Amino acid sequence: MTETQNRLVKLLQGAGEQHRILILLELENESRYVNQLVDALRRPQPTVSYHLRILRDADIIVEHKEAGRVRYYLRDSEAVRQLLVFIKRMLSLLSRSEDQ
Image (cartoon, rainbow, N blue to C red; front, side, top):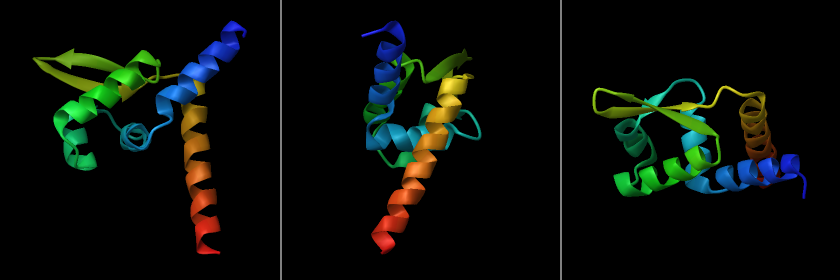
């Protein structure tokens, strides 16, 4: 596999789980602290932190430490922007096919 193919696999594996998709959608328009993501996802903090680590390791999100708290952002890259476009298009397509 080429390096580019490996990066694609890492990106897709990083995003390929329901909690991580929800996190990405939450981070789409603004950064969040972990407690905000816990509230939005209604999941325990260790669960959210686990998925944040996977997203970070896949280079999809970045973290910034601020006075003892960590704020999470989507990585500013075209690959991450296109990943979100893909996720939203697929969610729309799949919801339409469920309605039929």
